[in-house]
Amino acid sequence: MRQAIVAALAMLGLVGSAAEAEQLCPGQAVPAIDGRLLGHLQYGEARADELVAAPAGFAIGAACRVRREVAADLARMLAAAEGQPGLKGRVRAISCYRTIAHQRRVFCSQIGKGRRSRDAADRARWVGPPGFSEHATGYAIDFGTRPSPGCGDVSACFARTPAGRWLLQHAPEYGFELSFPQGNAQGVSWEPWHWRWVGASAQVPGAAAARTLFARARLSYPALPSTPDSGLRVLMPPAMTGIGTPPPPGPPLRLRP
Ligand SMILES: [Zn+2]
Image (cartoon, rainbow, N blue to C red; front, top):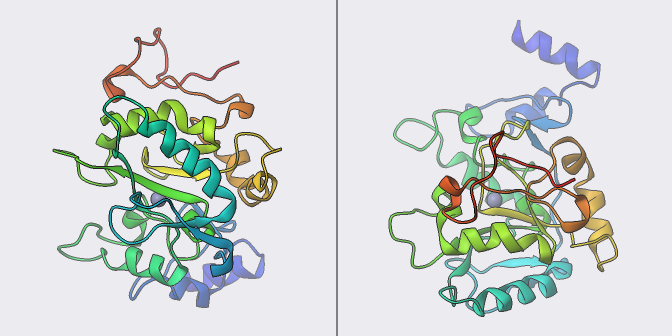
């Protein structure tokens, strides 16, 4: 019955084909709906010649590659962070560009009994399915920090670390925006470590292409904090970041007029 419904929706162009659904992970067939898979938008893979190595010493583990257009802003941002008291060497990368094949390994390897996620839908709350991750574009970076006592990588507590707090305040100045803010309508968990580059303004070289690629995401599920020209900034509640003055009563996310 379910297969028949999926096939009917596919004919109407509302879901992906059954073949596409079967390719996610072994035993995890999920149809794409409205061009999204488990909430995540579809993205292609950057070519190797579009990528460059991130500054030396930035990656914690595997080498970090980003699109060429991202490199200058990333270098400037890291230099600015280095100059802050207590931040020298602290703003690091957990993961940057990932091929779709790599994304499949990351996504599928932690599904099942005794692993982090019980099924694909659960896994997709934290990780984009293969073919539906911003990491394949070369514009996205998962930031981390060292040392990081008591806070594992890609955890919400990153927002309370000196590196995470500094990024929340300053990354937009360098063209980065937080793809998955708290309470996002996309249904993805809050990821204070995952930033995508779109340029601080549309005039920055390469920004127009990045903004076109992320147009649907930015329109439907606005990043927060976002770039200075978007008008979307955020005051994080001090309980979350341990910094700043308490926001006035009301919802924790406040938009700048
Ligand atoms: Zn990420």
